Amino acid sequence: MDIRLTPEDLELRDRARSFTERVLIPLELECEEHDGLNAESSANAKRAVLDAGFNAINHAKDDGGQGFDLFQQILIEEQWGTATGGLWDIPWRPSISLANATGEQRERYLLPACRGERRDAYAITEEYAGSDPSMVRAAALRDGDAWVIDGTKWHVTSGDVADFFLVHAHVDGDPAKATVFLVDKDLPGVRLVRTPKYSHTFVFEHPIFAFEGVRVGLDAVLGEVGAGYDLTKDWFVEERIMIGARTMGAATRALDLSLAFAKERIQFGEPIVAFQAVEFMLADMAAQIMAAKSMLYRVGWQAARGGTDRKELHALASAVKLVCSETAGRVADAAVQIHGGRGYMREQPVERLWRELRVDRIWEGTSEIQRMVIGNELRKRGHEAYTGWPL
Ligand SMILES: Cc1cc2nc3c(=O)[nH]c(=O)nc-3n(C[C@H](O)[C@H](O)[C@H](O)COP(=O)(O)OP(=O)(O)OC[C@H]3O[C@@H](n4cnc5c(N)ncnc54)[C@H](O)[C@@H]3O)c2cc1C
Image 1 (spheres, rainbow, N blue to C red):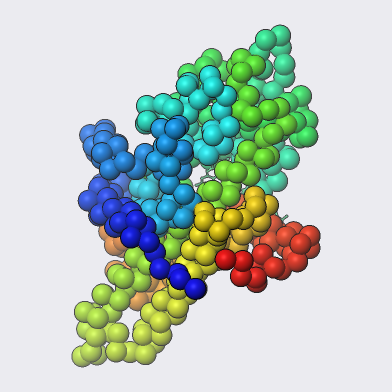
Image 2 (cartoon, helix red, strand yellow):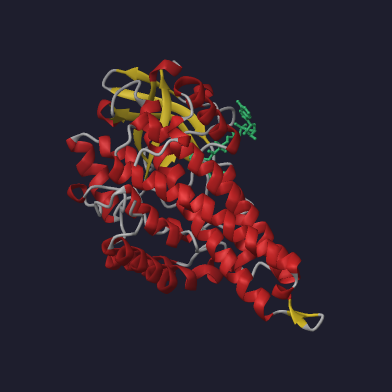
């Protein structure tokens, strides 16, 4: 069995690491202190993404993306995930669902989004529909040669910088006809309701948007009427695996910082790393990262290069997201403990990592929802996907 990274993989990982150190990390304190970036920093960062060739890492070269396979994307996102402030979201990754665009939609949305001229935001969640998207009330009714969309979407990540939305709505109010619509933000009837504050500092916002009698053409349907869940599932699978990658990057940085701090912090005449209580925390952090990261790489490799079907990948992506996000949460908590009072200061990266990693157990499906997906797989097909070794 050969589990080495190829020279190309290593080169890509190093390139992503250097981009993170050169472009993202230096923006952390500005982002934390000002709850975002100023226009100049944003513009510079955007240019740096294009210069580094890190725009649309998840799309095909033909569509203006980088054509990286899923494993390569994991290597990149793991590095980006070390940065706090959600700065990993600066390099735009247009939703993978856009790969289903028609020729005209591709010209209008996908290609400019990959180039960084447009930006999308995915709007599914509502006040009464979170874990259970069948409760979505956003409805699309046919009126002649238009669809008319009404609904209110919550937590729309990057909604402040997006100029179009992928809106998950039910045609005729029927959950069996869940459909994704491409909706330009500047259309009449699209209204910013408010921009709530969240626990984490994030480079962009997660506003609430109302869609009030918004008229879009019949060609605004992505995929087809009723394909909403399938498209959203593709998005979830990709995002859940990328959360696995980013949380592993974040956890590794938390361990790195904790080890360095424990070696230099002297109390009772000794570096605190000499105290077994601290050393054991570090040992647990390292061992837990090793376990979760091994799983992430195995699933990523299997998906990209080993061949796995869509259903299986959906089941595996939930396990990756569950284990990596929960592991990273524990690691970051220990990192704060090792740093003592300093660990509670926002100017310290471990504090920000700890606060920011909390949402990874909530968004893109909570940990409970990931367990439901895994349980469903166990009931339907047994445990082979998790316990077997198909490589
Ligand atoms: C910062 C942030 C950004 C987000 N960005 C986006 C975005 O860009 N687009 C978007 O559409 N959404 C986004 N979301 C929404 C996110 O995906 C939802 O918050 C998440 O799926 C949970 O839904 P909910 O908040 O309604 O919780 P609920 O579904 O109300 O769940 C509440 C609790 O009940 C538990 N629960 C629910 N059902 C079950 C069950 N059957 N069994 C066991 N436990 C259950 C949950 O696990 C949770 O603990 C974002 C959320 C946040 C916080």
